[in-house]
Length: 68
Image (cartoon, rainbow, N blue to C red):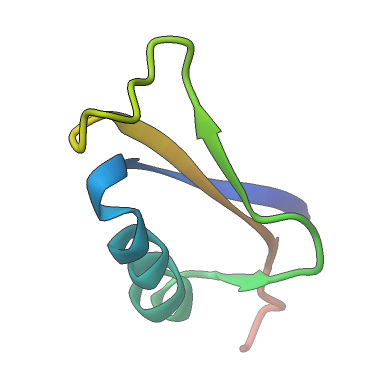
């Protein structure tokens, strides 16, 4: 199954958000990274001057094969 995982994260800590996804969440999850665009999504009310503004970080993933 192909899909994307999406994490909501504060803009001022975007590097930590990607680090969390790649180093903690992905290895512990039942998903594997697949080819495809990684993305950041900013809502209509997003203010880049606000480090607490929430954005979405997305990674393309596939379900791990059973037994892996």
